[in-house]
Length: 251
Image (cartoon, rainbow, N blue to C red):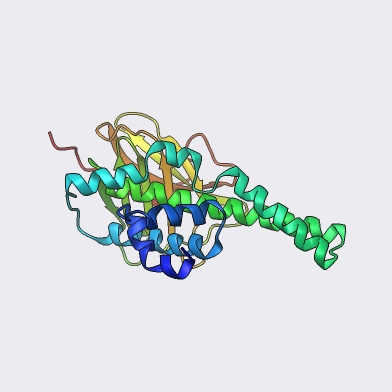
């Protein structure tokens, strides 16, 4: 199948409910580095993540949950959506093009480096969106909001899933000073904050950050964000910009 034939199935693929043969065809296109399908699936995953973040909590059916969780299973996430040999194939193709066009060595090296960087960035973005969707749609996900009571503060939501990790979706984040970065913290009850990853906001002040892995939601009091040096810190050194209190887990 070509990309035009698969275009209407990107959203179903992002939801984990695409049927065969479209599901296998889309995955094959992504595995060989098809830019059209990679961009289409990325847009669909972004849409699904944003809709999930803004919609009221709902309990998915057991059948839908099984299909969603199967589509973002740990083996697939560890392997990534673009295998290592996809970069090799792309670079091999570039060699042929470079020879045909008579690129000089320096131009060739720059082009190869750019291609490698773009492939790594695209893979990281798709992996992050897949992990975010797994947290949003997973069973036992707890939701906490922040920033709603102040005028134009950073605001958004935090989602915690015991088996999948923590997802932060924020808006109105100010630009960080030079050599500074945002750091997320998981704050256990009666214990020191635990570092939970570094991130930067987009130009429009929005940000999505995923800390994949297991998390003890019952013992977590809050999730916070501070501004730290670009290397990060072992413990917060500034006043938290974001504090999302985690509601008590139901008994």
